Image (tube, rainbow, N blue to C red; front, side, top):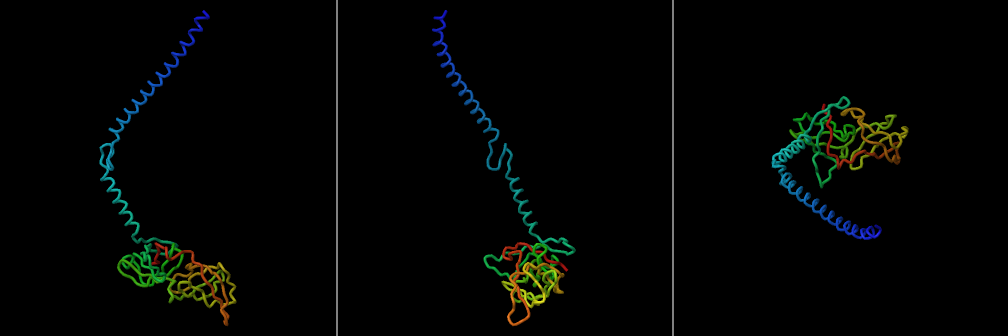
Length: 238
C-alpha cells in the first residue's frame, strides 16, 4: 500500500501541472473570444460618425446649439435698464480701443434709442463715478471720463466732508484742500457737484502733500478699478 501511494505522487503531480496549463489556455481562449464578440457588437451598436450616434444624425442639433449660443451672446450684449438704490441705470458695453489707450474717452453701445441723454452720469460697477455722456447718437454714445485733462469738479473728502477741487488727467489729483481739515490717507472721495447725484464714490485719498506758499493741501487718488480693462458701465438715466 505504501509503495502504491509513493508511485501515485508523481502521477498526480503530472496531472495537476498539465491540467492547470489546459485550464489557463482554455480560460484565455474563452476570455479572448468573449472580448472579440463584445468588440464586434459594440462596433455595430455604437458605431457613429462625428455627428451620428446610433444612426441618429446630430448635425442639426449641433447647428441649433451653436445658433442658441450666438443668440445668447447677442442678447447678453444689448443694453438693458435696471433700478439700483433708487436710480434708473442703463447697463452698456464698452467698445474696445485696443491697442490704443485713451483714458479720456470711452464709447458705449447705447444711445438715444436706449434713453441716453447728454450729461448723464456714468458709473462703473453701479457705484464708482467715472464720467459723463458727452455725445449721443442713435445706437452709441461717447463718454468723457474724469481722466480727461479738462475735467474739473467739486468733491467732498472724508467724514468731515472737506471741500476740494478735483482736477482730471492721466493722474487726477485733489486740490485746494484747507489745512484746517484733518484729512487722512484712505478717506473717501465723493461727488458734490450739482450736475450729478450727491455722494457718488470716486476713490480714496492717497499721498497728501503741502502746496508751497499757500494754506492748502493736495492729494493723489486711489481708484478701485483700471479704466483700460473696463468692459461694462452703467449710465444714470435722468
